[in-house]
Amino acid sequence: MGRPRGFDEAAVIRAAAQLFADRAYDGLSVDDLVTGLGVHRNSLYKTFGSKRGLYLAALRHCLDQDVAPLAERITAAPGRQEALRALSTADTGSGLDLLLLAAIERAPVDGEVAELVARGLAALDGAIAHTAGPDEDGATLIALALGLRVRVRSGALLVGTGTEGAGPATPPPAAPQPSG
Image (cartoon, rainbow, N blue to C red):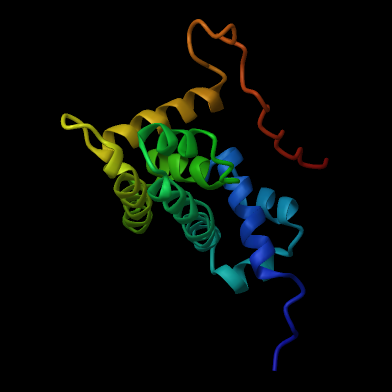
């Protein structure tokens, strides 16, 4: 019989989702994860198998805990404006950011990530489809909303808002510096 786990797996997955959403998969080393999550390397590997295993757990968490509830709120909206407002003002934690980064960075090279991204985007597309006009579909509206999220994240906000070139609203956390 092994020792009991010394950490809360769900809390580690939530924290990992935030780290991956802030810095992306390729922007984090296993050392960064160990430091940022406060778990031992061996515990991380024993529980998740690999950095990729932790990433997949974090992405699934975001889809289930952030994206799915957002899709439900969008579906429940009575009209297009309310649905777009629900999407644009959503506080999804790391959900939308991790979904965006997964779509851009990992889905093209990892089939399992691609399937999860497709599932998340399909949920959002379907949720907003009831508000689409005759010449639009849900995917177009979701693409617009996600594009705006990219602009906000990058600091390249909308022209004419007085925030052009203002830089990111919150700078990404600095990478831990290796000790000498």
